[in-house]
Figure 1 (cartoon, rainbow, N blue to C red):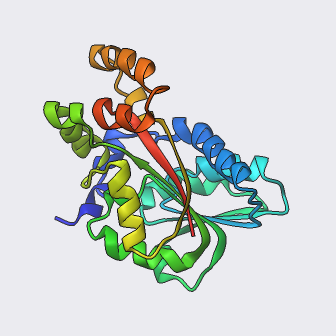
Figure 2 (cartoon, helix red, strand yellow):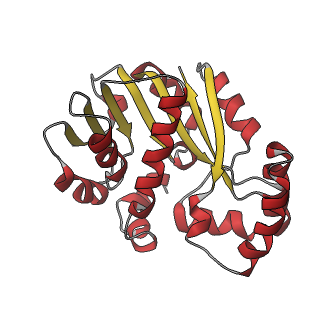
Figure 3 (cartoon, rainbow, N blue to C red):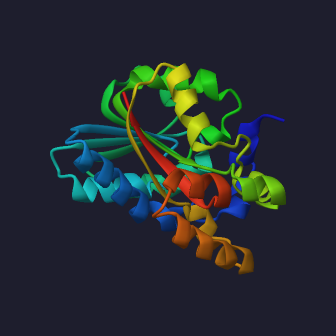
Length: 233
């Protein structure tokens, strides 16, 4: 079965009826943080795999009317959620950006996407020329505790379609191998964990809080629970 089938046959929507809309404002905030940190003010912004469209909607409200925003989505179900959000400087398209004669955009957003794609190397090579700069958000599913427990990785595979799992180092190596030059990056707490509260998350939060200020990389590698933002060109 093709990995994209779940986004059309209702499986993904059944597991994620909001298409993670509840995290959109927070993700838009992290994008603005990355742009401000690197002195970037894009006037054309495009998101591939825009889902319910909430991230672009928040950015269109906060980055100014002079900027133009486009979202591409291959799922007709997600497109039905994002289309009503259109406005003068924001448009959504049902289709595959990589098959369109569009771009390059000042900023391309690839937010929680390539962990869902079967041939993610081929996908990223096609993505590269579509943006002058690209911001990625990738959940870091691989850590000592997730490998030992196994259940978190398999849970996210079933519930949110993560068919590939990454650590910081494998994300950076993958982007380099597919032609990107990494400009900047930072960690954030993984928003997927917010949707699965429980005693395990509470227990792991204690060592995360204690260790993260001492060593970001070691804390993430051992305890997990973080995601990764990368600016590349």
